[in-house]
Image (cartoon, rainbow, N blue to C red; front, side):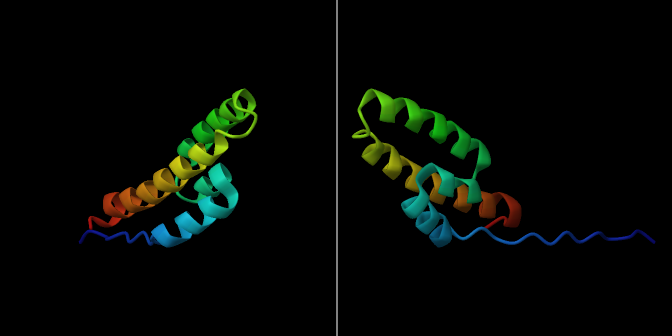
Length: 81
């Protein structure tokens, strides 16, 4: 008789990802994608420095989209739907 192992992992909420990235920017992306958050932190540092902070408006929107897509992709990859 073979044993069945069940691993329980929670879903990642796309809504929560959007809220976190809205309020915390690239740091909020840590909820949905650690690698993406680290990449965006580096990009925001460079863009913020080169544009005196004005470019952060655009990177903030990118963070929100990337975080939501990453949470959705995680759910699709882990749960298959």
